[in-house]
Image (cartoon, rainbow, N blue to C red; front, side, top):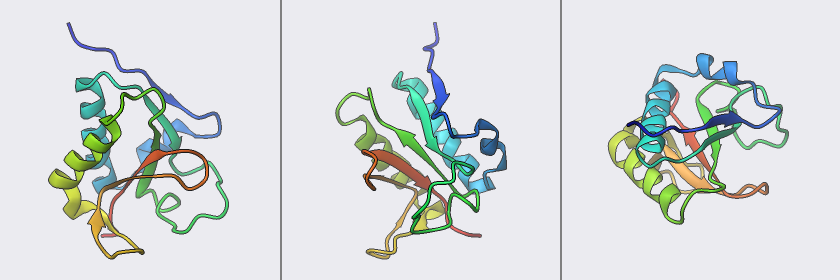
Length: 124
């Protein structure tokens, strides 16, 4: 029997924006969906493209290169494990950090609205 993973979006997030993600972002999304299914983790998109969040540092969401996931209700360590695994396998697709210059596909951070996963690919 397969596990069921619940996929939801924050109210202001438009789920159709997933269809507009760039090719590398789709690759990262596939990994995330698979990881969450295997570990029976809920998927809640908190930002894709059209959520109109002001004060962004980069344009990665507007350019359809990034999406954010809530880690609320995830067991301790699960978010860190996803970051580690996706960066090991797909780090070469990730964007370069403005703060340290390292290339990463996923970071666990808090920009004022709670800890979440930010998954982002580089520009082609």
